[in-house]
Length: 542
Image (cartoon, rainbow, N blue to C red; front, side, top):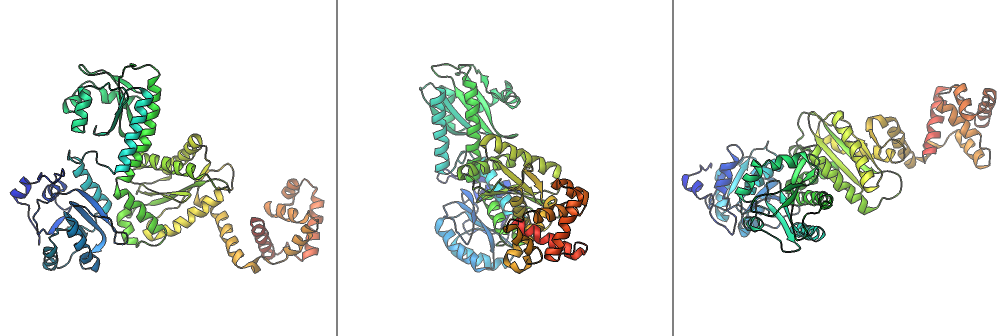
């Protein structure tokens, strides 16, 4: 059954509900045609919507009144849908959004018994995109502005309080839409503008208008240092953008206090803005379940737990080319866990601002970046990886390496892509002077590394003619193995091998002849030579 929006429904789009004003009717109106179809709405469409909630049947979220439940992986004809209706009704959810088609009369009958609205979403619309669209509509509602989980809000207020004490004035932290996120003052020096901002939870309209007329936003975009803002009738302020790369996350404001605005204060304010940027990135990650869903989906598909079709929808894998990039600590030593966490945060911050649409997954001591972009050429990905490795080294003192996987065109190729970049990371971690590389560039070394793993499981593959040379080396006869290795490294060129060993060609010929006599190795036989070289390299890799 398709429900048409009535005039009464639209008129009631701002019915009050404990501060949440957008109703289901208003949400659907603003989302536009084709985004969601109402299959059944037993309680009408004047139901207030609090927030979109990603529903995972394996780890169900706690539902609240007004939640719009995005039922990921739940079809209308599955038992999971019937099981979801009861907790949704008990919590007073605004509705359930599902994908797929079924008997509308049957859905209406089930839903009427629970009183929960059911929406049908096109299969081609990723859940993450729907979540973003719903969140965008709700974020424009003043009643929802600035809402965030308590811990994140407290972190921002703690940061504002510390900044106010350091700077000796009143600090305001605003998002990119000039909504007030946190504030604090150390000397009580405030003005009417500050009070109005707190009361309205966003910058007053007349103040925003004045900022635009005075060109303040333009000056902020062009400056990396705080600028002075002097508005008639208000205290002087210093302002600086809070940025993540080229993305503007918000604004940091300092109201002049009893100590004035000394010249040195600008540098400290800029440093606090950088710290606030990291906090806002964390806030955005923790208040954006869609981003969390994409990361969990990526983890699931990398581990082979999530079906390829589901992952393709959520990660945006179409007919174009995608790549998996992995970052990890260099060397064999276990890196400091705190440093790794900061490195992952830095990578996330830079990737989200410089590579829109990418999914970042910090996982244990590694960080995976999935770039779903038909135009994701190496001319963009490789410089970004090199920049990130350098940035982490300079800012955190942590040496990292990055492996760029090959092109992925199907989602079921991702587990293999992960194995590829994991192996490349391990190889890069032991090589000096090459922090970033394509997995393809390390293909030969990767094959040898995989053969080494196979040989550990099947040690008989390593037994052969060179066993005699290994025994002689253990007895102190050390010239034979280095001689054979140098000969193979030089592609069996006697002149080059003699130079590498700093011996005469005749001395090298004598050693090779003795090797043949001692272990029966026929260096003129290509198969004997290949097996001996392979066993030698695998033994050296142990």
